Length: 250
Image (tube, rainbow, N blue to C red):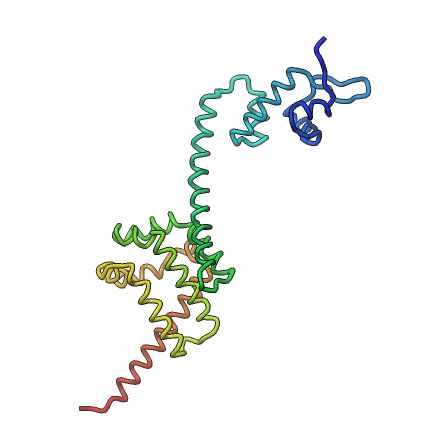
C-alpha cells in the first residue's frame, strides 16, 4: 500500500509550511489525494510530483493563478509558454537594471557634499524612470549626439547635483537676490562644460520646445525651479535695462 503523509509530514518532506499547503489546497493548486476518517489531509507520491511542478513554475516566476491554469491544462504547450515567459523576464531584467542604475546614481548624489531633500530624490527617480520616453521625445527635434550627451550617466549625475543645489537656493533666496543670481550663473557654467559650443547653441535654439514638455514628462520639483529661474531671468534683464538707462550719454 502506498505510503500517505499527514500535512505536517508532507510539509517537512517538501521543505514548505503547513500554512502554504493549506493555501495551495484553498487555491486548488494542490488538493490532497485523500483524507482520513477525521477529515485530515493525506498526501501521496502523486501529490509530491505535483508539488514539484508548482515549485518549478514558481521558480520560472509564474503567478499562482497562472500555475493553477497550467497544471490543469492537458493541452498546454510548455515550450511556447516557457519561451514567452523568458521574453517577459528579459524585459523585467532590463527594467530592474534601470531601477538599479537610478538608485546607484541617487546614492552617489546623496553621498556627495550637496544636501538633498526627499522631493529631489523622488523627482530624480521619476525622471530616470521615464528616461526612454524623454529620450524619444527630445530626439524628435534635437540631434542624436546631443541627446546621447544629455542622457549619459555623467550628465545625469551633474544635473541632479545641480538640481539639488537649485532646490536649496529656491528655498532660501528670492529671484531678486544678487547672491542667488550669482550662484545660479556659477552652476549653469559648471554644467555647460559637458557640452560643445554647437550643442549649447542647439539647446538655446530649442529652449522653447524643451520648456513645452508633455505633462506626463513633467515633475513638481523641476517645474517649480523652472518658474523660479524664469522669474530670476526677468529680474536680471530688468536690472540690466536699468543699468543701461542710468549710463550717462556720451
